[in-house]
Length: 599
Ligand code: ME8
Image 1: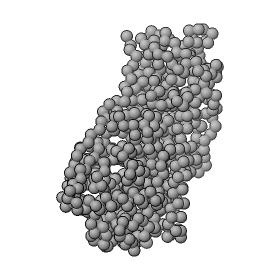
Image 2: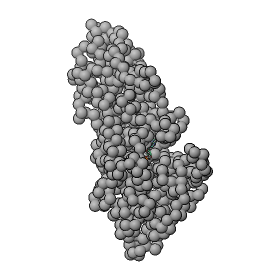
Image 3: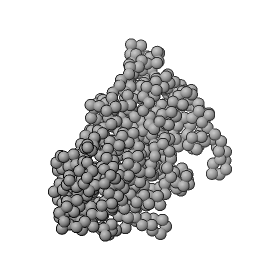
Image 4: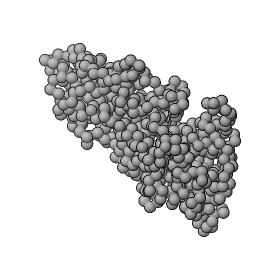
């Protein structure tokens, strides 16, 4: 007897639990000896009963317009935010712009604008890109906002009151482009565009300068052991694994104290050190606190702060996995649950850069390939572990194959009036597709049902790890299986005058629409507009699109199906139009015949 399949619910969720570990300050010389603070950090696992979720992107520098990499981080975070909301979480999603620091000060000067006007203009460009690309942030933060200044000042005062900040003198290399201090071992020789010898950061290639000035230092060195303990005790704190290992490796080396201010005479564009107008707070300390600002720090951050997840690019790992946790430990705050790191997009194997003239404009591309098309491409091809190369041709081929032909083709076939003249969700016939073989279904059909039944759990597992490309690989494989199912049974060849054939035809279409319903529901975080069109065409109401509604083919398990007999949605338009190569390698959507796949 073939049993109705078992639904593997929340495979990963069952493993999620909250752990709390108590830590004592490693730093005995606290200014207030009685305030030996208990430093806590949370596990990287999500608390099972907690229905709050908080996801962030980096806040982006406003020295230049947004590029493809910025959109990529935003799309990843948006996908996780939408997925959590579908699961019934109260999800907060923050993005925004990083507007202080020398780099911005210089960019505004070069543009001949006052810094705030300059920042507002570029920040608006990011905002425009994000709203054009369905980035459903719930908070857009700018570090020039008053609420942020208050949060940074409070945070600074907390660190200071715990004796973690002292006045010192910093001498060493600084990269304005990265707004980063470097050890001598991180610096190498290079030539600038005029052939002059310069020093550069070995990691980013950006020019560095020798800097010597009086400023405030943070006792980063005392947190080395705690950071190691945190990472070892929470192996999923930094994902993917290779980045976790990279941080552990960095922590094997010396961890000097960190300069956390600049002299006002050199840097005016920033937040002053509380009580010392001659010093400006280091832009990275300022910027990292944005995550707390959005959470409601300093008064009401608890609900969000203990469920914080950061999405970042690999270039800013050290700031997020060393400096930020150390600052948080210093301030007595929990650490982020997970730091999700992704690799970079390159163009023809090269880093995107203004000087190389190879920066991919995400707004232009999303107009060319549609917003959902770009989202799908980035999430389907982007592998967090390794860099990916971008070409327009790849986008076109992928979208035509997977969205236009396979998914769009399947929907066309199963809803076309030629096969479905009454335009309703047809009935399932248990005799034609029994739980034991003997009906008209063949062994491959049962394999397909098994695959689609477990698909939500597979997708959930990959979303939780932010391996969205794996989720899309799994969905895509199932879509192909369903196409194969329809192709195998050629429903257009069945004789509708024969009642058995009619029942089998209805069953084939019913099963296919059920598959499409599952794909449409699971694809919502990735391609919200396409999913909406697909689900609307199937007659699935907005209240029936959550994760909880993912109950595949209930009729096969002897239960009622709420969709059976329901009218299909009236919009029978093309799900995704095929893209055609244009002159100059530009692509544009092309109208396709709706029934291209029908005989
Ligand atoms: O670093 N591929 O801002 P930023 C993929 N303001 N992602 C890329 C990318 C690429 N080629 N290039 C950039 C800053 N990114 C700071 C952050 S957070 C408190 C402060 C993405 O404008 C990626 O997420 O230089 C990277 O980490 C981020 O943009 C850097 O943006």
